Image 1 (cartoon, rainbow, N blue to C red):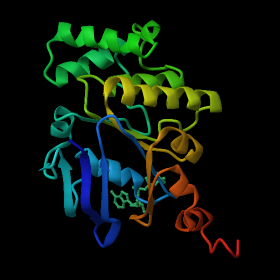
Image 2 (cartoon, rainbow, N blue to C red):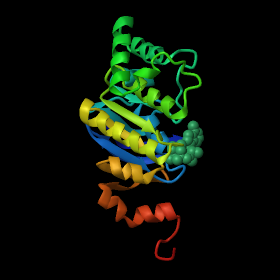
Image 3 (cartoon, rainbow, N blue to C red):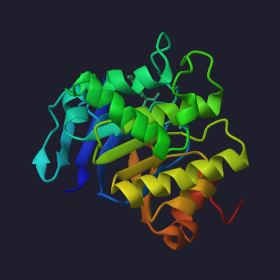
Image 4 (cartoon, rainbow, N blue to C red):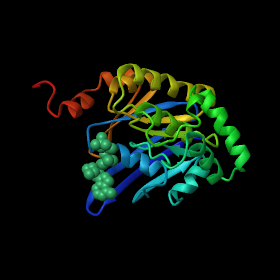
Length: 241
Ligand SMILES: Nc1ncnc2c1ncn2[C@@H]1O[C@H](COP(=O)(O)OP(=O)(O)OP(=O)(O)O)[C@@H](O)[C@H]1O
């Protein structure tokens, strides 16, 4: 049951942020979404999670047209996301950040707390449980935001630049975590990242956007061998560059 964009377009007034974008994430798969600044990556994720309605084309979940659902309905249907900034509930501790999300998804408080404890343990951050969310170190905040997104066992997780600002070691740990999320939980992941090396190391399939259009998609070899991708990143004719 893939989560997909089917010839999706998004226009802001006269400006087309996305044009005719078709892509799909399968359960258990990690796909990457890369492209230069302003390529439309965040708009893609917003559209796949109900934060932005497509102005043409469709969003489908398991073949069903979900284009008109609210962001909350997407989440309940099993499509979770993280944001560029953690957006944790800063007045709560880490456990409550997760538990409140579970309650918002319809769980009873005790069940939500139980799942939250299990998840923090699974991620190896149980020691953060009672820490206030405000003031967490940056990488911990990122990991808690991912844990919170995993509440309710979503079928899909969309990650918007989760490695921004991380060291190489922290980014490698994050890559390992994303692989575990896909392999051990069967969650289909879509990863937006400026760190192309990280994307190529963790993703079986990569989609490249430029100017709101898909200019390439395929495996690591296809992306590395693509003239269109090199041109998009170098911003010039590569033979002259
Ligand atoms: N709400 C909006 N209203 C008008 N224009 C928007 C809106 N949201 C995004 N845009 C424009 O759409 C284009 C794509 O933006 P988007 O944030 O999706 O790109 P991106 O690939 O995620 O960029 P970055 O890598 O810089 O985060 C940009 O030119 C942006 O200015």
